[in-house]
Image (cartoon, rainbow, N blue to C red; front, side, top):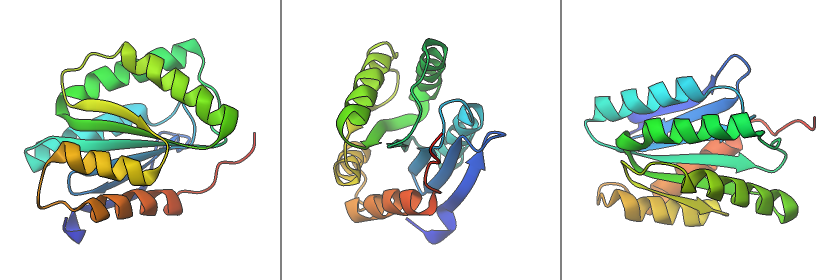
Length: 167
């Protein structure tokens, strides 16, 4: 993946709800909250896939401290997944946290994914960047993209995104 294909960090939404990163066919959105940035992120995913002429691999990173989504937000997330699905090689959701936080978000995202249409690639929940990178590499099935490059992109996204503020 060439350096000129790299974008980010770019805050999306009026409140910087998602922080966008992209490198080649790998797109990363780090959630800062659950309400802002989805329309902009969906547009960027579609534009990137169109510009590259092929599907992209999306990783959404959920870090400890993110607020719980209400029912309306969960439905908005499901619709977003439905809308982006056709241009995705895969959709990885990395839940980076422990205990109740991780269990809660794994449960919620599993429920959302069970209601999502699957017109593009597969979706999977992960609990580490390492497993996320390995799975994305497998799903992309592109010898020009190394697993290590994907992992570096994921790590860089997390490192360059400000920590969540306790609210």
